[in-house]
Image (cartoon, rainbow, N blue to C red; front, side):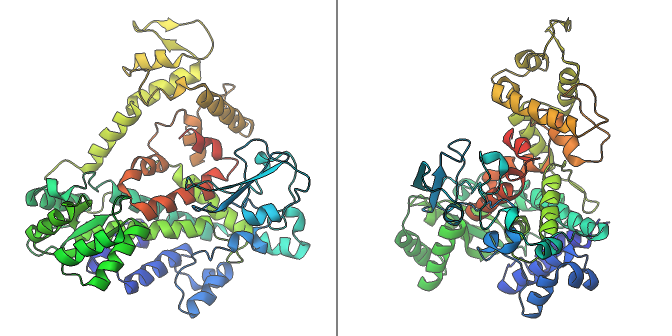
Length: 519
């Protein structure tokens, strides 16, 4: 049985909408995602999400940021977190900043006093980053920004902004966020890494559909199943190349081909043709690949689920940046804290329905990939945690090393059979160790029941953060780890939105930024 109605809804959405994400389908799915936040309870909606109640009456089904919410009155007392776009101005003040990485956006720079200071300006080349205004760890002095300083909050406004969610609403928000994150990971772990449609056969494409269906507990009718040819973004082809090729070799007319090219450019990929005839789609893919365009073929059902992941990521992004009077400041902080906690909690695939597996479950393959990348097994994790907690290590003969001090990372790697140069040897980076040690010490200071060892792990704590961030190097299979591992399976837009989610939650949180840094 599904733990939440939302999980069942997302699982069955492909069948409900015939694997086609139309505008109507997007509006209905968005409405379902947001309604889950208040547990479909109208009393909760009007009491704690009044702005959305008003918006819904006007036909608006999402809370996507307008772009100005980070400068609204409700943003006072919070970090700005404005994410820089390509070509946007980035301002620095060496007089106020702790180092060169501390920057301001245009509004925050002009909203603070830097008269007579050593300032500079540059244009963002597209590498990302965010405004550090409101982050006390980034500046030598209080900037007193007119948009983000807590000094500019009136007493009446402070009372309004201190309203928090009751436990039952906070629980509904947590279940919603956890369900959405799990759906994204569940779906993307079944996505193939090989996008070259011209190098796969019809049988491989069908097998991928059957395997993905088995993992989700769904039956797959190959005779009537729809498949799609997907065109992916690259930096080598012009709009004219794409439009001409799509028009000549697919059923799309010129206006539709132009729309496909624009979608590929802005979002990262687009469906160029849909059919039950896989051989036809392979012909289309081969024609597009003749000029080195990147194409893939997959079932429409699995492609719909991937598109739904994109929608879910946009939903999470709107929660990460939810401001502007939509909810109170305290409520927005609670939502971001919940996102941080759920990202730093472990992911386990939840079985959908009893099913008979004909092929090896993809999640097993993903776990093997994870072990290959981080270089350790769950058994190794326990051994490393024990070594770190005890401050000792064993030599290659199993003898205890009593030389004192922290265990040498290379000796730990040797003891579990991992080359010191592998990804598993995060500990060989002194920067990592100093960050992790300071994080552990910080958590220990706030945990009176913790061991005297700064690296002791509290396995009995109910705090997801204590089970993850304090557990040592980033080889525990948390949701954030899976999302980072799966990053290359996403396309342009969701990948960018995920980065903004990380910035708006983990990176801007004093509690979690060090946890994210070791990732």
